[in-house]
Image (cartoon, rainbow, N blue to C red):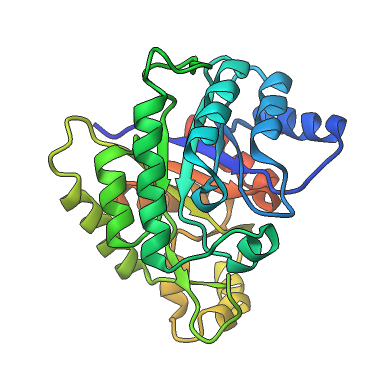
Length: 296
């Protein structure tokens, strides 16, 4: 039996306290299940923003989407996670990834490292959190036991293997660094490549007692009666793709509200995704789709 849908919004814009709380309440009213904050310089600091989001709302969970493991010392991160989980009443979901923007490490005076070294650090971080957070001697202790739900995001084989072993939620980026583009610019992989990545994860996770929830981050939601026009507009971002490939990709949801709801159902059937996140600029547009999926 398929998991029920869950929907998150990644809140990326710093606000005053009143504006932040109002935005979180609006997301709750639109039906979002999880209020998320990324981990980029120039975005809100994740943990205080999540505490404020939880205080302003009643129903949604809150989460990091995703923490850049290279920014964090594992022991200090365990303290942050446990404190945030306590202050939010056990509503925290912890998302972790390797990070992909070297300039942010440079600005922070932190080592960047090779891709393999960044995965090594993510693995050490997960191992330390798995050791520290369930430990009855760890102070502060998280509200949720043995620890808050863990999301691991990425597409590479090693990260997928780590997610298969440890994550309650496996998040797929559907993108890779764009060749010839400035550092930090990502390029979508094709629907077929994404399907292969999900299949690889499933092979690695075949021995799990309980299947993880599968997550996908949608890049754009465009409500329109002319899907082809949107595909033509976005074609320069995927010059080697056909319109059909672009319209079939879960990174882009476009059409009428009913058509977008059907796309979400189709992506669940093809890839197994049941937890969809959108970026803050798409928060309002996706709200009616959530209602359609729940009531239609």
